[in-house]
Length: 298
Image 1: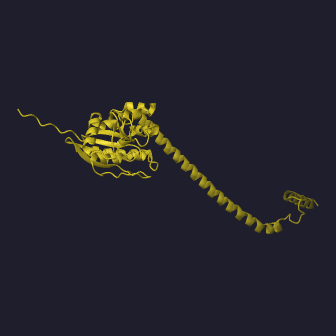
Image 2 (image 1 turned 90 degrees about the vertical axis):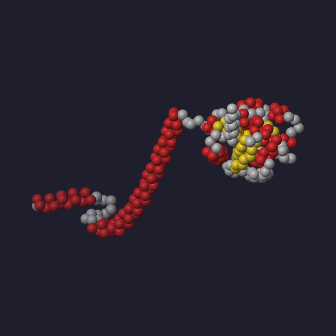
Image 3 (image 1 turned 30 degrees about the vertical axis):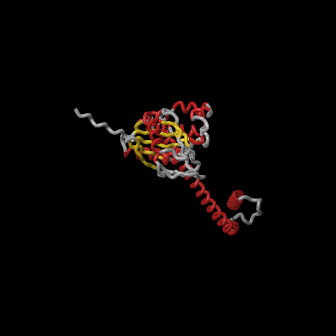
């Protein structure tokens, strides 16, 4: 009987994530044995968008995804996460059956401390709650190590130790300079990453629950209503200011008319001859009526 042909393993996607300057691009170039990714020491982040390259290991396609630095001060965390999501989505659409593993890249030349761990932990927003189980730590510039990687990490503090204990894969050190033999480096990495890899759907963040989505919708509606009321209030203030300007203009015109007509009105008034302040208009007419009545009696 004929032995059935062995089904080829699905592509293994290694997503390189880490702070700026950790050596993500250099690690990718070491694994590929080529300068596929832009790498170098610079004051600003070298990688600003996801880049892709592929190689093969034991007949299996390995796709590397180089991502922007997690600690880039010139880019918001949300923008970085959005770009990583975009890159992963592109690979997932092109290779539906691919398996994904996240390589958390840190440099021995720097420090693996609280801020680095916080940057790594923020990736849960991109890859969902099982992110840690499909991740492993990759230490670059291993030529600087004077002890073993485990001893080096043991002195990083309890917060770092707690985070590392959640990772699915064991830490791996890579020597970027002098360059490690590519075939041996990629083989070591695939051996560690393949068992903890997961499908793209398994790494996707869960959809929001109905109650949470409803609360979010209510917040959006309240915000829209608040903005509408603010606009109406502003329009009322503007309209009131316009009417105030109009009434001020009317008042000025009325004052001018009174000033112009006052002399003629004073001349035409029957009581104008009376000394000012002695006889009021009412008293004048009452006195006139009395006099006319007296003359008739006579």
